[in-house]
Length: 306
Ligand SMILES: C[S@@+](CC[C@H](N)C(=O)[O-])C[C@H]1O[C@@H](n2cnc3c(N)ncnc32)[C@H](O)[C@@H]1O
Image (cartoon, rainbow, N blue to C red; front, side):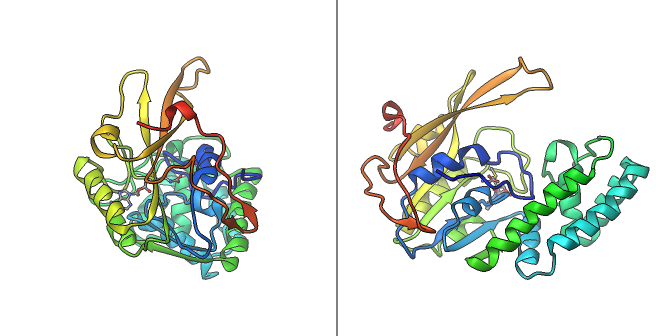
């Protein structure tokens, strides 16, 4: 178990904050091997598991740019505080007009601080780009959006990265998943969280059956142990690709509830799946991560094999 899940400064749809524990209890990683996370999004999974050596990558260059800038100390938590206080004060006066000014500026200059500002003030913390790769999420209206407590929360999230980056050998790379997976060897571990197939996605890239098959081929050719996050079923449909493409994998499930609109009663449930090319019930996982013993627990026995 992770004592307290660290939430990164970047928000993204499909963030796996609630799955970090289940993932951490079922990964099978040798000591001194490398963690590969080719769809890092916010990076919440690997950043919490904190393997000593890791390669994080994504096709969206902007989180990668932000994390590299923090790693190289070009952006510090103090710089983030000053930037958000300054821009937040103008936003409080000019509201949407200033948001759209920053959005235009970001689409011309791609400053990671502007990306952070947009990500934390846009509608629903979405990351979405148009066909010309311009960020196009509208403003998430909220009075005093960058209130003192909110700025401090973001600054603390950046501070956490500042503290953990120097302790670890981590690379952040902008590239398609194939490039990252081809670097992995049999002793390594690959965690994949691609856009959910068969569902509407608004990520930097689209995702379809061809991508899912290419991912399967890349993962099996690497010879590494892997874990893949995907959706299993909801009230209306099942993810048919699990049987079609991933039938050789082991499966763990976790139910996830999300709200549609503001009404507490409109709770929808979705069954999340973790697929693995190893049996998490029999792997004698006694490797340690930062001194912590990793154990296989909490799996749902009747859900394990498909
Ligand atoms: C579901 S999100 C990952 C969320 C992440 N696990 C988290 O918890 O924050 C999927 C990510 O895959 C990235 N992506 C989409 N297509 C890709 C591709 N072909 N290669 C690499 N990354 C891709 C998107 O930019 C997005 O960040």
